[in-house]
Length: 318
Image 1 (cartoon, helix red, strand yellow):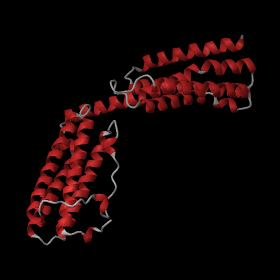
Image 2 (cartoon, helix red, strand yellow; image 1 turned 90 degrees about the vertical axis):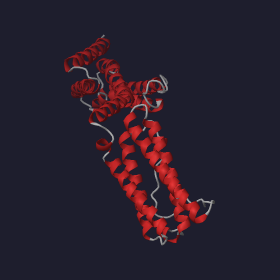
Image 3 (cartoon, one colour; image 1 turned 120 degrees about the horizontal axis):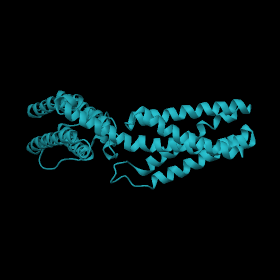
Image 4 (tube, one colour; image 1 turned 180 degrees about the vertical axis):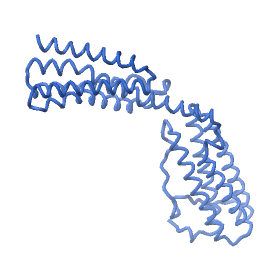
């Protein structure tokens, strides 16, 4: 690995060509990854890709004029001082805010490279081109930092925020809510049935723990195997499965933990309070993310919880 200060002017131009080619390909991947859900931002990255391609052509022309046809292979990882970039462009789905932040970081790094390279270059034509490119990269940097002002009108920005919220709901909220509802409601019957039948906190705790773990595993696999997300836009199936399974187990364990209290009556009342809190959280999530009116959400969740609770009480008391 070479120090930047040890690079010749030939190597500096070769490195600049490589950097522009890499940035061009990264912006192309960003545009492709965002095109379906964020078309306006994808269009912005298409424009930045074309500009990076223009920079590379100008660098190529100057290199060929100064040093001939052969361009030595020198990459950012071959020179000390460059920050390692996370391969964000390979992640699907792309997180739009992370992409905008990465684009700004890329432009800052490239601008600093051109400024530093121009300062130590003796050739007038090379220095002029590097200074020009530094100025243009500064404009790119400002564009990336103020993307919503320069390329995205207010209505387009609002549309993209709606799309981002929709993806969040599809990929995170829906599987998590399904798991939380299943864990909080379906495990009520076995937990309270065991509690009332045995009158022992520990027995109720073991039943609740087993029911929560089993339901979590079952719901996790069911969600992961339901679809691959390619047509529905619901994201990676195993990520959804993990979210759904974890929330299912959490929902069941919530009203199981109070049965660690040795006093049975205190444990029973504490478990009942936790159930009310769980149903309240589910109601809030449905109102907040599923646009369900408060009253409707409360009635739907409450009715299901009451029916399952009564089932558990009747079975445990028989």
